[in-house]
Image 1 (tube, rainbow, N blue to C red):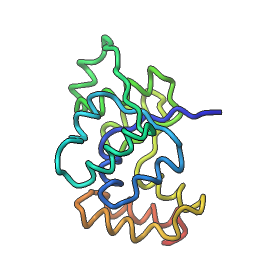
Image 2 (image 1 turned 180 degrees about the vertical axis):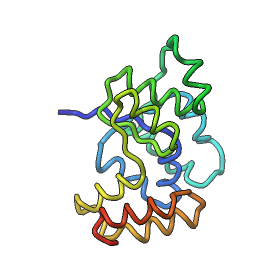
Image 3 (image 1 turned 90 degrees about the horizontal axis):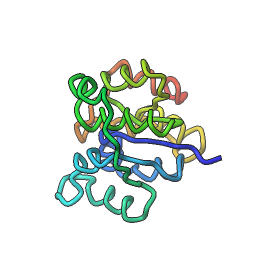
Image 4 (image 1 turned 90 degrees about the vertical axis):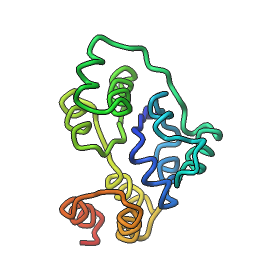
Length: 165
């Protein structure tokens, strides 16, 4: 059975910047993003990771879906940025199995709407459990080196769950 996976921009950018974007394809085969997330990814720019994400879109394993606007758009947009709001709305509209999102407010809102979420940490743990990674710690360090923010407590928890803590 094919799983429906929606992604926000943050985790895609973070994983692309540390050369681990392919973990998402290996775990989920295909993901969907909204047109707003596509805009946030700035694929035509020289930003780190943009070329890798652009190649994934071209290859088709990152698919773009235009979202039909709903009545609660304005409320959601006041709580989180437009990309996160659209990602949550798309996950709800498609009855997604998983929403890949790291933003704390976005995660809280998605959970309150019964959307199952996973972040970079969960992706790294799943990848290690499936034998796609030997160690999670070096990637967490790489993420920190490129400025991707994960709290020290979260890093410790990820390492514990990956049997590295």
